[in-house]
Figure: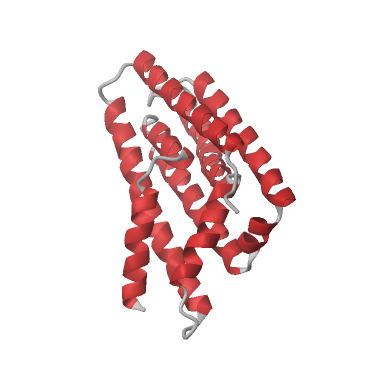
Length: 208
């Protein structure tokens, strides 16, 4: 059992390191230099891990793998949401620590950071399909599946939070040396990458 968890952790780490929408959001959140925004963005992604693996445990991943209508519906929602994130990131102005009424504004942005990370993961059908195909390979029918899924959720969340923390830290460090104009350029580069990801999702076809 321990060997299986280690193998899952290593495999999951290799996949998690690859930049995705939530990682780009973590990078962008880091440039705000606001710990609350950074933390809430990371918690949003962690919550999505819990929900996605929970849905797989209840069999939704297998259902979506066989339902073209459900898959297409979630894919359309995901594409629209990623384009919306890209638009907002393109239009955004980098925050500074000197913004007036900071506490009130940061509170709203922190809440938004949580939901953006959460929905960025949940609206991507590839995530649910991936977990649906990936996790069952590590399930040992000789042990309690509830305990195994709980262990996989914990490992996934810890790894995701660590990697997102690294991206956010990178954004924080970058913001110390770049002007507001250059930070805005960086946000727009992240926006273009999100557009690329949305386009890739729109063209994505399952391999039957």
